[in-house]
Length: 53
Image 1 (cartoon, rainbow, N blue to C red):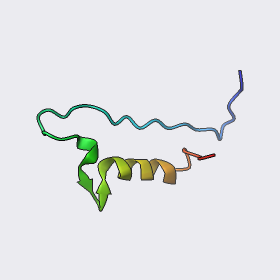
Image 2: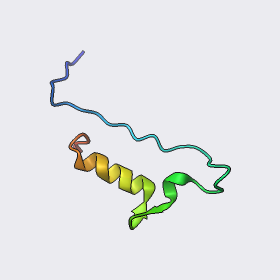
Image 3: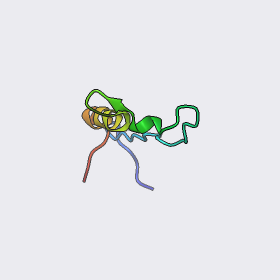
Image 4: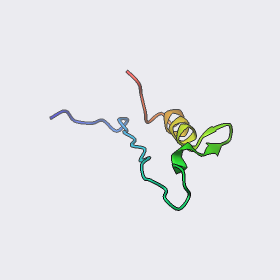
């Protein structure tokens, strides 16, 4: 098993659910020029916790 250093950080964005009362998926609602999900993922990427290889 590989060990993690103190700089290794993982992030998991939970974006599921039917939003029955709202009538549409909450993660796809418009938010600051994008969808709520896009904005959330952007914040995670900007935090340095989501390195892309």
